[in-house]
Length: 138
Image (cartoon, rainbow, N blue to C red; front, side):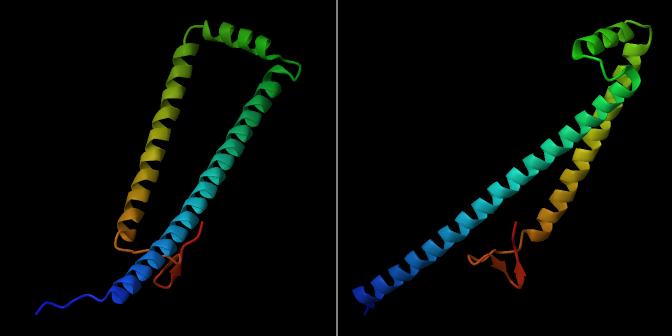
């Protein structure tokens, strides 16, 4: 004869599922918060790096053309330089070199990330934020 399910048993099992669901939702919320914080940190570091680069380039402009140079004056100087034979070609060649170097750098980063993803595929993160004996944090 088929076993009859007791309503009390089923309610207890449902309560366990509900508790697991709440724990998982809490863990997901923590992960999402950590992810948002990490994205904000990356954006802040990228802004700092860009600002630093702009300051370095500006410093070089001031070094070679004087500190009283305005943006309009510097553009006029660059326009005159680019009209000279070979200057535009040289600039484009240098720009292409940097673009290719950046592509290679990004591809290298992506391959490093792909390799680390392969190592973590079999890892199951528990709702508490622990994975085995390793604690994950942002």
